[in-house]
Length: 344
Image (cartoon, rainbow, N blue to C red; front, side):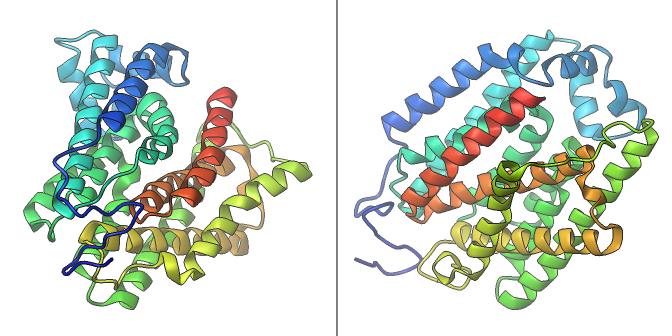
């Protein structure tokens, strides 16, 4: 039964009474996942790579002037902490922000967050917070601003968080631009989607070009062409098909639905813009360079972007009460995450 204001009550995620915090089951499940993840970390890809970066004061990141915020962070941390202690501190920081962000979302917007949220968070926790910790650290700042937005964030607060995130991992910059459009251009729904989609399409096009340049710079690394079999073609086709369905499904487009709170409406703008932009950018890449994006290095980068968008989409689905769809998709993403970790 709907209630007045920006909130909606449903059997899946609404609540007639204001929730005081996350349920005990969600807290324990999240704590358990992060606890296991810390001890599993040495078996994950990039563990030794980040050790070398940490112990060398920045490694290739410092040499190429990339992600200087992360470089400064590890240079400061290495004076006090060992590598494993640093990883523990990063995981603890991420866990605290995830807990607090979900608690604020529930408290301010009266959502009864389903324990299914833990299932949909598993892929992003394993891949982004476990293996790709630099991107995970930057991404959790973005999620924090999105999920805690009871009203439009103050411009200075938004700018500071965006700057910190981008300095840690430059790859989050397009997400911040999408979030800016979602929060500050929401009165102009179609214009915000158009601008955001073009920006993200340019990012996708640039991802492929940068990957191609990196390949050239490192003497042909990952230039081998991917020759997929029929099962791989079907598997990889799932990603764009889900996005096309989402783009045209009116039930999942909540941009102008005032019954839903700002984070949900903003999430809708971000996801729709990202999906349109990704598909448009891929089409531009094919039109300009043919199927050279099938080079392993470029293809891997594009799949990485696609999987991140779908991971965020799963979180969105749970928050709007589409838990069954979210669970099906999250199991697919868990399998894809395991495949990615094993192949790395």
